[in-house]
Length: 221
Image 1 (cartoon, rainbow, N blue to C red):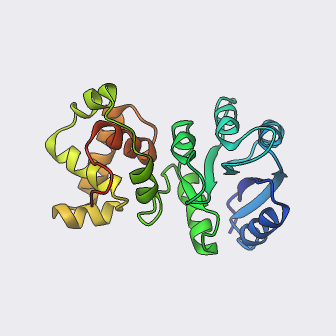
Image 2: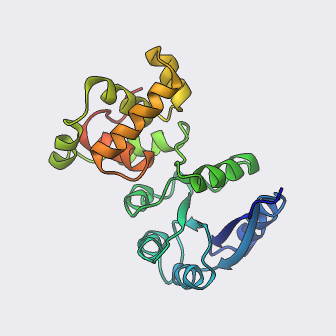
């Protein structure tokens, strides 16, 4: 275990929540907490000073909310990844947070295993899209059809649209491959092509566009 640990900054206005996350994260040899922030403005300042690899950011915080804090963090040079925290039934701003550039979000009552997996997944350049949370929230917040998104989606092939639909349902590459009866490597190639054609940074951004373009609609499974 000689690899440099993933450096995590915790941003949440509840000290007990931060303490719980710190305990879980620092139980792992490949993760370390480099700092804590109790509000969004402090999160931006700490990110600038501490240069973390990933910020675990609450959506709702005083002084500066997590959405604007995410925008500011991602505008910094060598910006870290941002993984949002949300309370599903209360946070109607989670979609805006993803649009601000977050690489995904977790429920604040996620299990330790889900938290750790989410941090590692986002750090590795992918995104966290849990079918039991993200899909329901997007179903609830999905906007009307957007003409720009529709034109972008029109550049996809039929198979790429199928893969995008699977992504929007929260399926992994392996699950999409099983659905389409193709190799997982083929799905991975399609995902790369989809991200390039849609000009989005990751799967979360692609899922938002899929809803905006009507590739999938609220309530669809």
